[in-house]
Length: 290
Ligand code: ADP
Ligand code: MG
Image 1 (cartoon, rainbow, N blue to C red):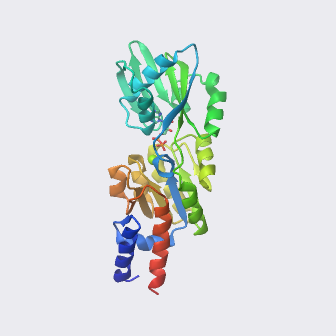
Image 2: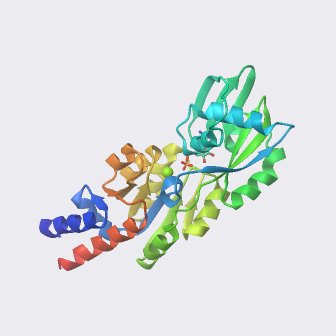
Image 3: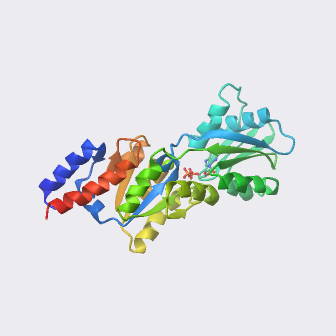
């Protein structure tokens, strides 16, 4: 490709609301084989909401919600926002010894009650028996909800079922990308069952779930080792290493600054049609130059 036509391609992309920072990326984009999507905030709206609260061990809803919302005051995770919204009008209780456990959840103490809030792996790590909630957890997850468990004094006391809807045009945009011949992969820290339910709605080919934040770049590397040319599409701070590892990093414009700084391409509109536009353009640009 001549520098001239790449420059023209970058200009065309801007008209579609696709910001190309690194002109070289447009050329690399023309040889991609696999597109890897983060789930939360990329395929989905990234505005999770508490849809249902299930209680165990004679716990009152108000107590469970107060504990959960008080813990989540210390977290910036989208799931924390969902719980905070649900308890917006409620007085919070003081939490001591607060800790964030990356990819798992949060912990702390209210008075002399020890609290844990997060996924099943977090509770298991602390030797808390989740048997009482297991049937509910699979049932909720296979419907696409993310279940968040609350344990108090070593027992499961509540499960918050959190819904994060697919962006309204994600399935349509992914259908275009399929027609363009790409393999579509989802990469998420969320649990396998929830991830598969959302992937099915979106039209994703392969799901890589339960990935810890530090594992996302590693997963991209593994695909590259299989001979794939990989674009990573993400919005979060935890996606930045994977965006850097990918052959082409694409950030959602509404996402974290770190993701935008790391990616070579940024979508100014909150829609994955921008990916289909950018990739069609990268192929068109290069074709025109022959
Ligand atoms: P992702 O953003 O892809 O879901 P994360 O690594 O941020 O990945 O989180 C993985 C999982 O850890 C979440 O799906 C959730 O189950 C749990 N988790 C992480 N942080 C929190 C939190 N603050 N509150 C509740 N659960 C959390
Ligand atoms: Mg995300």
